[in-house]
Image (cartoon, rainbow, N blue to C red):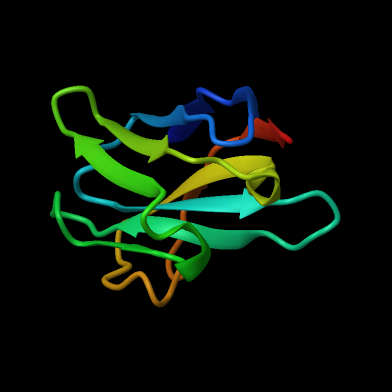
Length: 126
């Protein structure tokens, strides 16, 4: 069974930081493109960051988070991290990670998604 599990969410104040983790079970995260999505209250899910399969440095971010989020892959722990800095209330939402063994570019965030986590909640207060 292929599983993804997110953790690290919580409540922080404006300007705070959090690090989310996405851990895989039953498959290698290194050979999958991992995308982080966010679903804000009352809004549709949107992709916010992506790291391409087989790479540690081929990454991309949605404009609203550039410079404040960093995605990274730890192959020894089969974990993808999402480090978030200078958080804003609009970053509030449920964060999901998803895996695709075929996606080759972050511009196709849903392409070939096979596995999703259940999400972790981030709340940023003013």
